[in-house]
Amino acid sequence: MAFHFLSPAVVQSSKVTFPKAELYVPVVSGLQNAAARNAINNKIRQTERELVHDQGALADPRSEMIGYFEVKTNEKNVFSLSVFNYAYTGGAHGLTLQESLTFDAGTGKSYTLAELFKPGSDYVKRLSDIVRAQIAKRQIETFEPFKSIRPDQPFYIADRTLVIYFALYEITPYAYGFPYFPISVYELSDIANPNGPLGRMDVND
Image (cartoon, rainbow, N blue to C red; front, top):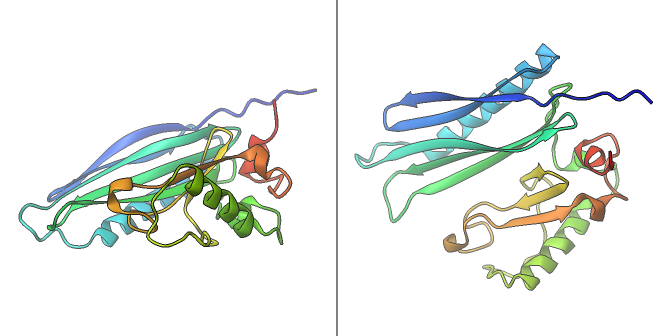
């Protein structure tokens, strides 16, 4: 059997500054496919711009903005990361926004949550049931009784785990931060798209 090692992406931090703001932006290199590398870097830059825009004006004299990132998975041609943007724009406390991206490092394709699963599988119900059980078990205080994730709920992949999460204030008080719900890929084997990132993580090699 021919063994094919897929080398991980090389990730470097590029510092971007503008008045009252300092962003550390991930820049990917080291991929064999230049088009894939460009697609990944373009999507990351676009996401960074959207987060800056979503935070609004830095007009308050005390305002500041800091951007940073965390790489979650960088193996088996799966590259998953979270990009954060903290801004204080006045008010009681600052707000952190998080956006996560999961790519096929071989092609540069960016995955939606739906694309992690087989077409037609009721992934929303399956994931919502797991999240609801975790909320009860972990005694997480939610504003309303939890009903369902959104079909495009934010996620990232960390090792062999799909992590579903919610924005600050989305379902829980601010003090809870981002509520994260890790779900083992092995719990989702029957509905995972075998050619997608979850399918690759489900292979024991």
